[in-house]
Image 1 (cartoon, rainbow, N blue to C red):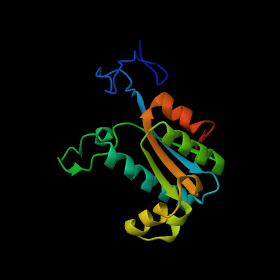
Image 2 (image 1 turned 120 degrees about the horizontal axis):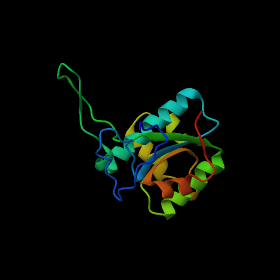
Image 3 (image 1 turned 90 degrees about the vertical axis):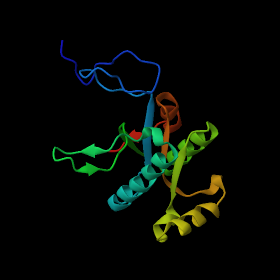
Length: 160
């Protein structure tokens, strides 16, 4: 019988992708980006790119092997699992951030002040200057067990 994208394989209990070539690959963890829903398109793209860069630096196990084409040209490694992008109101982003921090999940943040800076040093200083509960978050990236990420995201909806 041919498998479809809806076929769910048996949970292996670890975060290794299934090894059968014909089985869908499923992970026990999730990488998610939650964006504030009032951002311009260029801001959504910029924030997403910056946020996901933090996940791979903290969690090297989410990075796959380098890519190669048929001519043996090597390309950079990327995440070994999908990144799901969500959106929500400012309150949704703030609530997801609080839940993730309280649960000890790895979190990357992007605040509105970072649109006015031009380098990492100034970005870090802008975040450092504001207490957690007062951060003007425009996006967060999370990684953790699927159910924990889902609970942190709450009612956020998939980005269109």
